[in-house]
Image 1: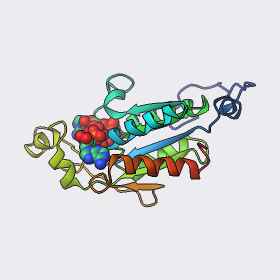
Image 2: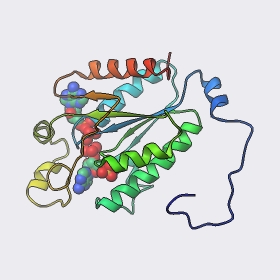
Image 3: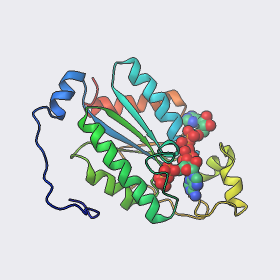
Image 4: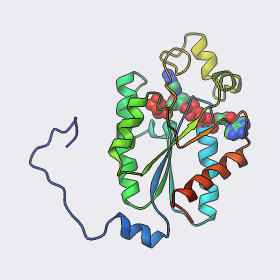
Amino acid sequence: MTELSKATHIQWQQYQIDAAARARLKGHQSTVLWFTGLSGSGKSTVANALEQELLARGVHTYLLDGDNVRHGLCADLGFSEADRRENLRRVGAVAGLMVDAGLLVLSAFISPLREQRELVKSMLPPGKFLEIYIATPLEVCEQRDVKGLYKKARAGEIAHFTGISDPYEAPLAADLVLNTAQSSLEQSVDKLLALLASKGVIV
Ligand SMILES: Nc1ncnc2c1ncn2[C@@H]1O[C@H](COP(=O)(O)OS(=O)(=O)O)[C@@H](OP(=O)(O)O)[C@H]1O
Ligand SMILES: Nc1ncnc2c1ncn2[C@@H]1O[C@H](COP(=O)(O)OP(=O)(O)O)[C@@H](O)[C@H]1O
């Protein structure tokens, strides 16, 4: 049961095939790599490059991305604190199912508040949440302005824009910190592969 549960008289159904059996079949462990950082920090670019490298190694992955999820699963949500939290709660639930299915899930969401990221972590089995902080400075993200959103936010055309008119709380104990203004895409991918190997997720 969760804080949102409305249904009563429901129980967990147990099945014979579990996450461990699926992991054995796939030859690697499942986990969530949770990328957090400002818009334009490099979450999608790094996750995309890592996923290609993992696919080449035969690792079964799925990439969950803020912009994409907001077209469907979370199309009814905006960017208020409550809506962002619900966005991330739904993503946490989906990521949990994918972890159970044996996948290595890459999630690229701003997820600006520590409480939101803690919520997602609490929804996953212990040890299945690796936090990757893309710590690219705001000045660099704004300079890149990949989608022209910072310009609009500065002009007051977008409310609640993270880093401009809405808060971003940096992780206090991320499993890995990357700054894409200082390290190349290849270096970031190498560090992530090393992290996954050190945690025993991939060999
Ligand atoms: N107000 C505001 N603040 C931040 N971002 C905004 C906003 N409005 C639209 N966008 C676009 O939405 C993308 C972020 O969605 P997320 O689901 O990752 O956000 S959150 O985790 O729920 O905070 C984000 O994508 P990325 O640039 O890939 O981070 C933006 O393209
Ligand atoms: N070393 C680097 N690593 C990742 N992205 C970089 C790097 N240098 C420049 N970039 C650029 O920064 C931008 C990051 O945008 P994006 O990946 O969409 O960020 P986010 O998903 O966090 O919003 C891209 O245009 C990418 O090409």
